[in-house]
Every structure is written in C-alpha cells, then in structure tokens.
Amino acid sequence: MAKPRYSRLPARKSSSSTMFLTMLIMFTFLILILLALGILSIPSSNSGNSPKPNDLSSIVHNVVDRSDDDEGRGEHWVEVISWEPRAFIYHNFLSKEECEYLIDLAKPHMVKSTVVDSETGKSKDSRVRTSSGTFLARGRDKIIRNIERRIADFTFIPVEHGEGLQILHYEAGQKYEPHYDYFMDEFNTKNGGQRIATVLMYLSDVEEGGETVFPAAKGNISAVPWWNELSECGKGGLSVKPRMGDALLFWSMKPDASLDPSSLHGGCPVIRGNKWSSTKWMRVNEYKV
Ligand SMILES: *[C@@H]1O[C@H](CO)[C@@H](O)[C@H](O)[C@H]1NC(C)=O
Figure 1 (cartoon, rainbow, N blue to C red):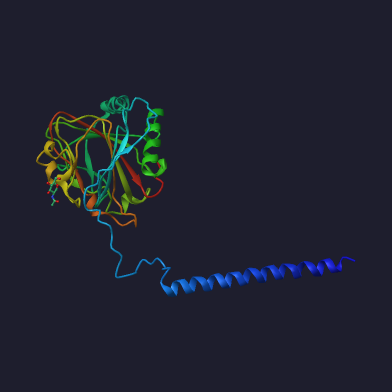
Figure 2 (cartoon, helix red, strand yellow):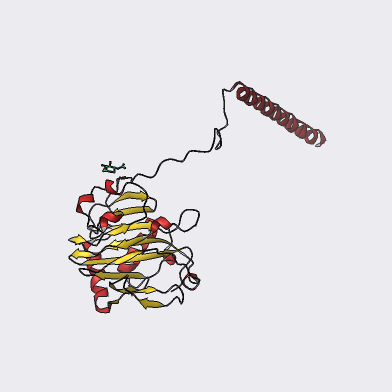
C-alpha cells in the first residue's frame, strides 16, 4: 500500500539534486569563462612581486571620540602615538580622585626602587633607577578592581594576567634609564610567562621633565605636537609628557609573540615638580598572586 509513495519520494529527491548539480556545474563553468576572459580575478596576496606593507613609520594621531559615561573623568579619547613600538595614550583614563587615592594609599609604603638582577632574578639596588615605589596587590579594593577592569578592557588582556599595580614617585633629578619590560631570564617568567604589555598611568602633572621616552621608536620623533615642551632627554626619542589621569599603553611583544626591541623606554629626569605614576604589567598567561 505504502510502497509507491516510498519509491516516488527518493526519485523526486534525486531529480532535484540532479538539477542542483547541473546548476552548480553550469555556474562553475560561467566562473571559469569569466576568469579566462579576465573579467573576474582571484584576489591574491602574492600577485605581482611581494606584498607591499603599508607605511606605518610616521607617528599617527588618531582622535577617537568617546561618549562620556562620566565618573568625572573628563573627556576620554585614545591617541595612537607610534606603531613601532605599538603605543597608545588613553586620555583621562583615571579621574583626579583615583590618582589621589592611589598616591595616598602608596605614600606610607614607598621604598627605594630596585631593578631585577637578570642573573639571580632577585631585586637589587640600582643607579639606573633612582625613584621610590611600592606594590598594591591586584584586586585589593573596589577602586583598584574597577581600575584593573578598565585596564583589561583597554588592553584586551584579562585582569588575571596582570601583576599588582606599582606606584612610583620621582622627585627632581630622579629618573629611570631606558630598559625593556620583558625578561631575559627563566626565573621571572615562571609565573605568568613573558610580559606582553605595559600600562603606565600618570598620577600627577610634571612641570618640567619626567617624560616617558622611547629612544628606539621608528618614525619622526619631532612630529609630536608637544615637541617644544620636551626636555633635552625627552628629545632623545619619541616622548610622552606626563599628564594626570592619562594612561600610556605600549606593547613589549609584537603580534607574533616575538620580543619588540623598539619598546625600549625610560623615564627622563624630573627637572621641576614631582612625578607620580602607576604601572600595570600584563603577562602572556595568568599571573598567580
Ligand atoms: C618631522 O616632523 C617635523 C614636524 O612636523 C617636520 O618639520 C620635519 O620635516 C619632519 N621630518 C621628516 C624627516 O619627515
């Protein structure tokens, strides 16, 4: 009884799939003919000789307006300052209150800064770094958690990949000689792997000097609008002037995870005023606290 139905159905199915196949073949032929006539062309990465990279050597100033979800932070916008190293300024990243909060929290605990000894992995006293500083544990309180969440959003790196916030204080004459943030030893990369990016937040304005300088940056370093305001040291590379609330993001690694020597950076000597800053180092992997 049901037999004809069963036999009819597959037959219809096969006829419709035959039609589909026929159309597909015809379509393929059409494409091949168009290709042969040169009307269509296959986009190819190695058409011609080698692909010509776009020129990113000039310092780019892109202004991206942000609608204010204001917590009294002023206008926030991001500026691209360099592609080698990849560096960006997020203006008014921290509010004045957040800057003052971090300074007040750190002030009683400031100790003379050390650098990491690449042979032993231990901290050592140093003349290349004459500031004083302290660490604030990750997730320490609500305000810090909020800042760390925003850093994660800005960098696309999870909160858990961040070291604790380091607060630094430079008085007149104090500086940090150019260095890399990535490690050259095994010891320091055991927890979290290599440092991939740094977010440097300025907690105070500095009257003169105290710039963050990238002496190995590619591009026209004198093209920055603030060139005439820079100290002698600041003119030794691509420089960022400290401004309360601004956050400088730069990458120590290229997108292919190789170390980026153009990320060499230093803190120029403060000439007039005081410099307070806060550093967040981000790792490739989760950093356990
Ligand atoms: C660098 O920028 C400055 C200021 O915009 C300009 O006067 C100068 O010609 C530029 N130099 C080069 C090599 O492009």
